[in-house]
Length: 75
View 1 (cartoon, rainbow, N blue to C red):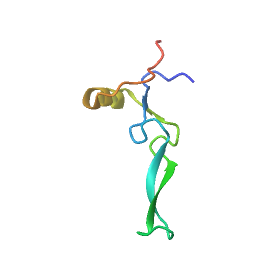
View 2: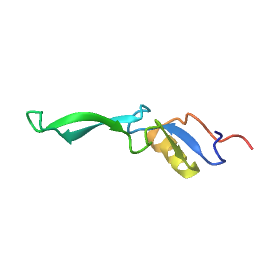
View 3: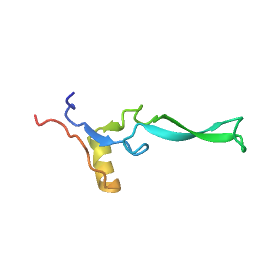
């Protein structure tokens, strides 16, 4: 699917493009009552990528040094 003009796609920062993150949950079997589990990343909804508009993308590139993995199609 092509990106619309002004949209940029980046690897998700939260899950590093994996689509899953470790979360702490209650676990009656664990000695301290908690264990780590894998869960779907909320930021990218398990896709591993996030889409940003021009302004968000410019900030991500300038401030964070991120590199987009897809850019808008030339019009």
